Image 1 (spheres, one colour):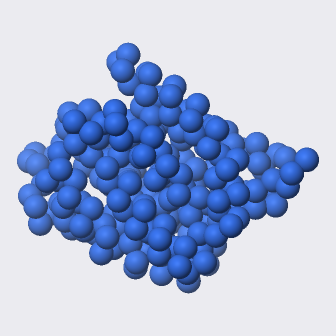
Image 2 (cartoon, one colour):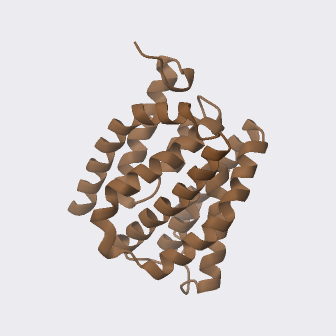
Length: 224
């Protein structure tokens, strides 16, 4: 049997695979949630520096696969502002990924997911939409979070929910955002050796699961 990604044992690999499946379904349905679920699950069984580049790479693959279905729903002006801010924040986040301790990264990932969950449960809503400067600032903060923990989609998704954004538009913007910011972050990670052969090997194992999850999630979105 071929070696499992990141030298994981069968039990740890199964947990990671289940995380990828659930994350892929969430990505297919809502346009976000993939990285949060993959990184939160994967960090339990391996170093975050392994799963963050994997999540970044797989986000790009997912965006390419979903591009045709969301192209007409993208609000290019807002997407462009978010992406511009994120491109500035990504290098700082990658610096944190490569210099922070594994335990600090795991704590940041846990707090990020927990905070997002609590905000969603409270049903908080914004009284007005964000202006261009606020949108760019959000993109910058999301870029830092993306480079360090691959959780850059969470703050943007939360603001879309709080602003009662049209689901199709929010999903399309997020998919466009992930493609450009993660392609950029992935390129930086590759030049620094963070995204490497081990990442691509893990992605090879994860891609079939991604395809199934995206199909199921996209099908569920169309039905609803």
